[in-house]
Length: 98
Image (cartoon, rainbow, N blue to C red; front, side, top):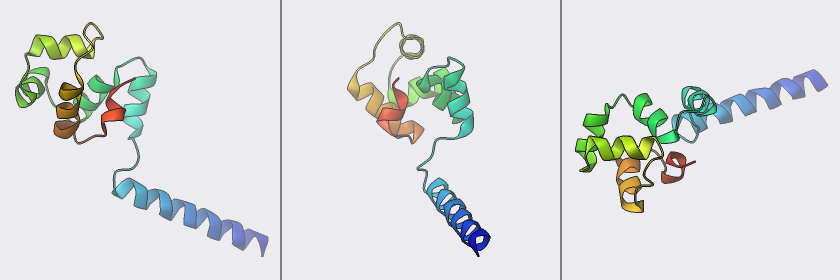
């Protein structure tokens, strides 16, 4: 009987995790691993969404050089820029900053 309860509990946890993943409440392992390896969250998300620096900079209305400096931590960027980035990358604003 206890094994059956464990199985049901595990099944419920797996179902819950799958539902959360479907609505985008989780961060893909690829992103987590990249950040653990020292990649900035912004770069990890940009690459995950398959944007080049040129494409993303153009979409949010800044220069490629400025976006690169933000990604590399040389410039901090403004809240407005990060808001635009979060919209284009379809990610929460908090997920783009360290």
